[in-house]
Amino acid sequence: MKNLKKIMLLGIATVSVITFTSAVKATWEVPAKYKTMKNPTDAKNAENITVGKTLYAKHCASCHGKKGLGDGSKAPELKGDLGDFSSAEFQKQTDGEIFYKMIDGRDDMPAFVKKIASEEDRWLIVNFVRTLKK
Ligand code: HEC
Image (cartoon, rainbow, N blue to C red):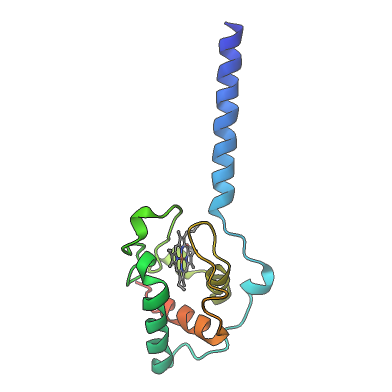
């Protein structure tokens, strides 16, 4: 009986730790420097958006999907929450936060810091991602 209690307590403790760890993981900490970083490109410029769209199609759509819904062809085999780029929750992030997540990556999300070496290209992708808003 005593042992059963111990096992139960251990079980509760384990579940709490797992819940806590996944809650921590759910928030993707972005350094303050990036949060407030200013996007130096013109987000309204149509030519910029076209370039951003091409870059997004090349680098991001295979996982995130053409419209950023998280339904790219590779999505089913990925761990982690791809997010929904058209959602208000996603769009309330600053440009700098999206920029940082793109270059830094996490788990199955690759870091693009080397693959997309041009800072301007990165911002143009951010601009395109903004147009996916519902
Ligand atoms: C190989 C698949 C893959 C590719 C390619 C990819 N991503 Fe991701 N992305 C992920 C996964 C998986 C996550 C979730 C990671 C996590 O939460 O640990 C993610 C998460 C994100 C997030 C955070 C979502 C949120 O809700 O805040 C952003 C922003 C993002 N990706 C942007 C991009 C951009 C921009 C590109 C293209 C330059 C890109 N990703 C390419 C797999 C990918």
